[in-house]
Amino acid sequence: MDLSFGGSSDTQKRNSYRRGLLGGLALALGIVAITPSCSVIVDTGTKQCEVNTDCPNGMKCEAGVCVGGGDVLCAKTSDCGSLGQDQFCRKGPGDASGVCRSLLSPECQVVEGDPTADNVFLIGSIHPTTATGFDGEIGVSMENSIRLAVRDMKQNVGGLPPVGEGATRPVAMIGCTDAGEGSVSVKAAKHLIDNLGVQAIIGGAFSGVAIQTANEATVPGGALFISASATGIALTDLSDKPAGATAGLVWRTVPSDIFQANAIVQYVPKLEERIRMELGLMDEQIKLALVHKGDAYGQGLRTALQTTLTFNDKPALDNGENFLIVDYGDPDGTTKYPETLEAVKNHGSHIVLLIGTGEAVSSLYGPIEIGWNSALGYKPRYVFSDSNYNTGALAGAIDVGADAAAKADWRRRTTGVVPGPQNTDQNYQLFVNLYGTTFGTENGDPSILGAASAYDAAYLLFYSASTIADGVITGRKLAAGMTKMSKADPPGDEINSGPTKLSDTMKKLMLGEYKSIDYNGAFGPLDFDPETNDPVANIQVFCLSDDGTGKTKEQLSGLYYEADSHSLKGLFTDACK
Image (tube, rainbow, N blue to C red; front, side, top):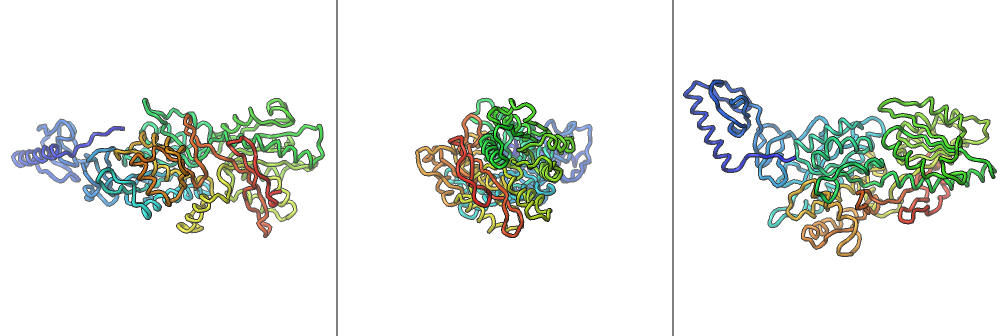
């Protein structure tokens, strides 16, 4: 959105002249003029103004009369000091002057860095930091990861490279909560864009929230929007490219669920082999249930899986009654948990794919297991999607039991998939260690899906901003910069996440010595598809194991889907067998 602000020397002179003229008129007519924050007693028969700029700073023109409540013009944030400590001089990209706006809002209360500094690059963060349960921990972990990147910048470099003979440009973050709700996220995004002029937002932890925020706030507002954990397939198809632009305004630093679906498609035949061997099945048909949440995330994975899954040596859709699909609804609307439980138990599924978030564990996983028909002579293998990895929910469901053998068997039959690097990845380990050193162990969890990728999102913004030679940062220019993050030109080594090469890389991008780079993140290599903006990434298979004390822990199994070869690689560790 383009905004025109006053504040030039000519305008200031005209306003000064008008103030003097109006003051003289006030004395001559017996009018009492008071400061902009107070009321003004006027002769309404006298026309004082035609437009707002005819009035003193902080006043506006209504029906030809200057009244309070107008914009306070500013050249820098210190000009807004009389209005309160949380005021901010909001300027359009490249503008020398702007208007005073409140920096904070009910949703946006966290500040990292100094957003009032001259020429600051202000990044927005919108995550479910105040949501209840595990969603809140996800939000805190992601916001803290962005804060960590901003601290890396401040402590190691100081800011973005200067433009010409100017000074280093500091970076700051305003953190907002969406409480896990799309409408709250939209409200926060509009505050960041409209009131603060933010050109880049990292947010949308969940696919539905990300889609609503993009459609209703960031795309119309011209801001770049990066999700660090929304994997929903529908996000790929958003209409986000402005007319004449080279790139869309919506990106993500996690792969689309297409990759999760591909991993599950490769993994299910492996499970089928194991089931047949354990149960002594030869020509008998196995049964599979696809149980999914009724939101964009669950429906997207269902669509991808039902057309590509194979078992019993044929496509899933050719398996008749042996293939069960159940939509259990959405906790934000109507759910069908009792009907789903009954359908799965009556089906007698050998494999149950549970595609959802926390409710898939609390409302389905435990009840299916506990209510299973023991007369069948077997219990199902459960396969979860990424949203339930490392949340503690799976372990919590199992560990309420007292029978050690039953718990061990339940663990053995529970696996899932999650995008990202293996735990031994050096960049990932450096991020995890740095997060722990900075925030401790009681303030979020760096191993949660979305934390490492949020850290990467911030670094990609640093590098993308450095590609803007004139220093006038807009969402559209940042999006163009994002297209330069996957293939080095000139050819060279990967640029790893973290501050080691931050200063040198930003300078070379600014000077044009690097036309593009190959960024290798804490979440792994981020090779963006030029058509979809989606990154290519490997998918890990996770398992449940005994932590040595009889308690359940979640871990990566050693088996993973390699995106480049479209096949499974590695082997299950002994703990996962």
